[in-house]
Length: 584
Image 1: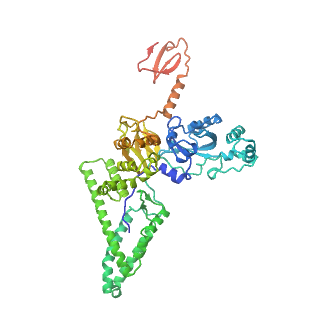
Image 2 (image 1 turned 120 degrees about the vertical axis):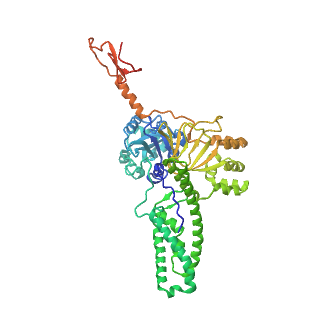
Image 3 (image 1 turned 135 degrees about the vertical axis):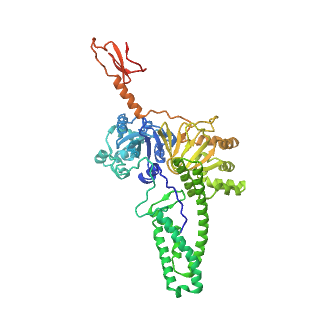
């Protein structure tokens, strides 16, 4: 029976994770756009879309989701008008369009567009998925002919544009084998059959017939098993020495009940959630089954066999493990009691107290109560550097900014990195705060908010901060950065990074070329809200209204202020000042 960890149970906004892992196919080419800002800027770009377009993720961010930055000479000019209609009316639709990669190579794609709702059933985002259909747009027979006469790919694409026929008509007239994108027809929205998630906070859901490992039933059952384990550890040696089970029928019945309880526990364990290495509560039955078989199943099944000698050995092992678990549990509960007493002593508000408690509990679930700093301090400098490189290996070995770093440079960087864990709702950066850190996202997702609007959604592999190696002064954050889910970051401070770059000057040049910030917290995003644009349009319409007043009308030669407008013989116009009606 393994120890119980609370895991990550706070409400999270797992929209990005659901889109990537559950909703769309692996390596899907998609972007996410803000539906409440004019021109619908991209707030998230997938790796698939980045590879398809040739632009890196930072270059696509905040570009129009209508993909106008990929338009070219042969792109149909009417496409932008159609896209405007789809986005403005918040429709779920699709259309074919000729786009150009960053290398200016043309390609035919189908754009599938769907609105994303929040908990109030209001559209806040747009999901745009791109499917490359270039091969399907070129007739096979004509392709062979064009190769003979020397036509290139661009010429064939140009000719396909002038034909102005969709894929289905080409397939019927020219016998083209058209692959159906993502298992549906090309004229149907790929999102039609998908249940798109909402952009909202929601608590982790447990499937039917699955037991939450923190539930009251499971906690009670674990205590019962613990008591039965203690009973077995004490009684088995006596039964072996004095042969009590053979002489006392009552002892035999108790032993049978204990064995039955352990067998029932095996069945329950196949349906009980657990916390994975990332701190996530796993409720998928297949993952639960595989995890249990690879873990405690063997020991549990042996412990359930009513063989006295085997039980004696196993229970001694269990007793040792239970003592270790008990010690760990004691430290855990002492920590929670200290936090509760702290909250009472300083009268911490309930909301803040719950955030603190959730952060501490989730951090414990991630670290298993191990104080990493304390362990690192036990080791000499050289060993600390080796451990730091191991802990930050995914960043240092995989990110292109560190590829040309020497071994000594990597060790200096690794020691300077810190690992940071954030709970849902935590603000990593506040508007107006100094930007003192460069953050590499290892897991989870964040949202960047400026003036109450989402300007970026960030996930694994993204980098945020400021260009310390370029800017001499310390910058101020223009935005708020908030965790949507439980998030792990690798962070290096401004001063530590500058010290390393100053000492390793050759690496500094490579670093400045290859590190691309997904979002620069120092730079303000200039945008106009869709709601503000509508108000301006309504104002302009009112201003264009002409009022024909006869010469003898009381206000024929006068102007009057009414509800923010000036009304006179020339019509309506906004009132620049607020005062009573006046004579012209």
